[in-house]
Length: 79
Image (cartoon, rainbow, N blue to C red; front, top):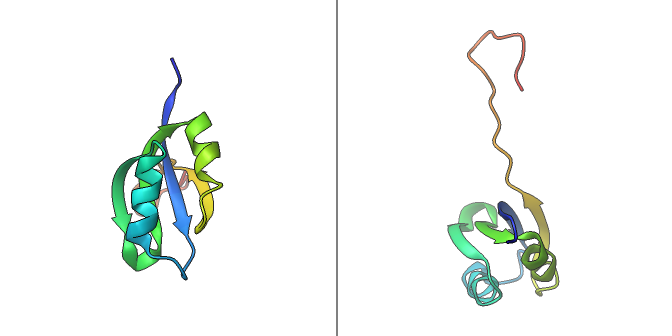
C-alpha cells in the first residue's frame, strides 16, 4: 500500500488557485487547505500522485509538509 504524505503546493500567480485546486483534486490530491493569500495549497497524496501533480499547469513547486518545533522562548535548540 502506498504511503500517504502531506504536501505543500505552490501555485503560479497568473493562475486561479481555485481552478488549480480543482485540477489537483481531480488528479488525486486530498485537499486540506487553500491558502489563497500566499498562493499555496496543502493536501495529502502518495509519492506517485505528487510526481504527477508537478506536471499540472500553474504548479510551481511541491514540497513535503514537515512539522517544525521551534521550542520555547530562550531555548538553545530550535529544531
